[in-house]
Image (cartoon, rainbow, N blue to C red; front, side, top):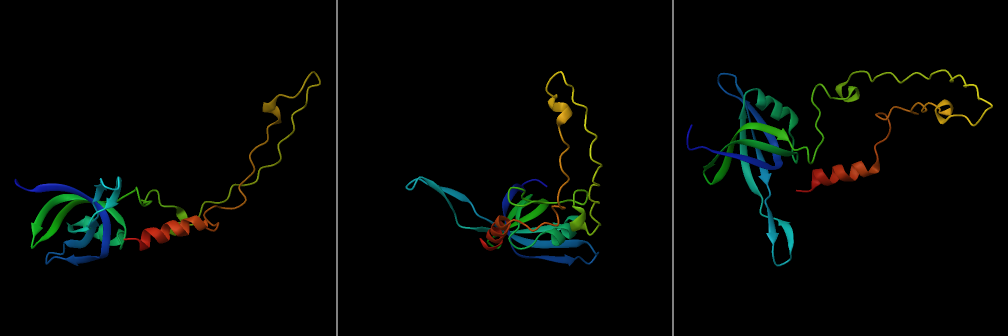
Length: 178
């Protein structure tokens, strides 16, 4: 259609994603994104957050199921689609929605770690037999390549190790700050 305004918005999901089905069974999801514009304050000489602008996003079809399954409150997203002003609210009929990788790590089916996917983790590497020492030539010092040792096997699987305390503070901040 002509006269439509295509826009890209970037912000946080606010509230829950609602999933419904049309009379024909087509899934449709609706969620709100709070877009916070950055404004430069010339008096102070620094950037600051402006007033949040709520944008109601609607998606249909398979994208609606993916959005309903993946997005929760406070997740940063980037969405593009046709923008319209209806009843003093901005509405975005989204064509594309994605997690903003500047704020989150996202896995897809092919890259999901086995532990998170519910599959058995890869077996730990086997310890190899001790290397056979190379004979040392009496004519001079040993060459560094002949005396190098293989790297030791990891002590444990890092997926099973406890997370660093710094992860907790980063996660807590991104979930609570609006």
